[in-house]
Every structure is written in C-alpha cells, then in structure tokens.
Image (cartoon, rainbow, N blue to C red; front, top):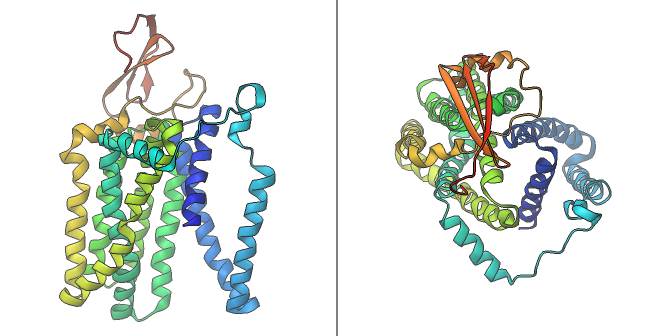
Length: 361
C-alpha cells in the first residue's frame, strides 16, 4: 500500500518537470522505462552476488538499505515542484475532503472515453502478462527443457529487448504517431509472444521471439504514460492517475489464478493457445474503436525545441509517419501554424497566420 503511494508520487513529480523543460512526454516516458528495465536487469545479478556474499537474510538487509539510501537522496536532492513556482513559494492547494476528492477523480475519469479505454486495455494486458510470467513460461520450462537457465534466458531476453526498444523509441517518439505506435506494439509484441510457447520447443526460437516482442512492446507503456500526462490536468493527476493505476493493476492478481485454473483444466498447450487468442482479441480493441483510440494523436507530441530547418533523424524515414504527404495544423498562443512533409523532406515555405479562434478546444 505504501509502495503504491510512492510510485504515484514519482509519476506526479515528472509532470511539472517535463512542463518546465518543454520536452516530449513520450520521450521522457520511454527513457524512464528503459532506466527501470535496466535497473531490474542489473538488480537480478546484484541480488545473486549479495546472496552469495551475505546469505539470503543478509541480501534482504542490503536491499532494505538501498531503499533507505533512495529515500535520503529524495529528501536532500530532489526539489519539490511546489517550491519552484513563481515567486519561489508554492501556493498551498485548497484542502478537500478525501471522499470529495475521490469522487471528483471518478467523475473526471468517467467523462474521458480515451482514458477509460486505455485503462481497460491495461487491465487485460496486465492479466495476460502476469499469467505468462508466473504460469505459462515456468510451466513450459518445467515440462519442456527442465532447466532454470531457460527461465532466466527468457526473462533476460524480454528485458534486454525492452531496454533496446526504449532507447530507439525515446529517439523517435516525437516523430511517430502515437496511435500507430501503440497498435503496432500490441499486434507484433503481444499475442505472438504467447503463441510461440505453444508451437515451439526450441529455446533459441523462444528467446529470439521474446526479445523482438520486448523490443516492439516498448512503445506501449511510454505512449500510454504520455497520453495520461498530456490529457490529465495537473491538479487531477494524482486522483485520475491513481484510479487508472488501481484498475490496471487489478488484472495482475487475477492473471496467475486464472492461468493456473486454465492449465489445470485444459493443459499447457491449450491454455497458451486460449490465452493467445484472447490476448489478440483484446488488442483488436484500438482498431475496432478507432474513433476513440485515435485521440492518442490529438495535439500531437511535443517536438524537441530545435531548429525546424534541421534534417529529421535517419530512422524517421523508416516509420509509418514518413509514408506519403503529411500536413500538421496546430493552434497555440493565439496563432495557427501549418507544416507539411513529403517523406523526410519538409515543406520549405511554412505559413503562420492569426485568427480569433471560434472554439476553445
């Protein structure tokens, strides 16, 4: 319970820092995902060394000390965004009863179809991912290869894929349409990662598919995180973000239980096939309800503050955003700006004109 509050606080601290830096939400979310995955991969190795050096109980004490060190770093080195407001003193937020605040968060959540759709997707994908991690993959290793090394190899392949993919996505995030990135990530990195355990007993094939799946799936979490940061107002971020996280995480405890029941009743192969089919059906939601999900692209991504005449990165030409002509019309600070691209070439003209807006949206 306390860890959940800390995690939400960390997410809330990023919002004012990104606004102040005027950086792209997706790029920061991808970089953060890469750091988390890298630390998890390193932590597993460090944990093994700590157990060998200090024993199991000693390693737990070492782990506890690292959390204490992290708390000290936060207290002394992480600035409070509230103290960085104008005049150097942050105005205290008006006190609001807890139930009233919670009701306001649910009201906001109900009125946002895109956030509801994203939260529902996260609920089911977390359910299936947990089923894979705690039942399907260990059972496959136990019944096919009988080697704990295989279990570690699969986990490491997915983590390394996520790390590599996060680096690539952090570079391309401002230039890729969010909707296409999310759909591509779910289609290529979702169901195939499950299905391969039902049709192959070759560890090399499993590791390759798992690595590629992790690399492609790296676009999902940063895209969802960027949308939450962009769509949810700062004062509502803790409430709405807490509701989204609570619903999304509710799928995790169900995943292991349901996967165990399915494997017990249908067997491992049939259980994996059923999970693959259901996972694919869930990932079709953004395509079927594309009118809602395409709002992922609303207002676009926050491009880096750089020279607009500078050439686009080489990888941009490989993305779907580079296919065909692309015209972007944006309204900001009382003015309209239009940009056009054909492939990787920018329209050299560019135009800007001012007009009184007819609506505020």
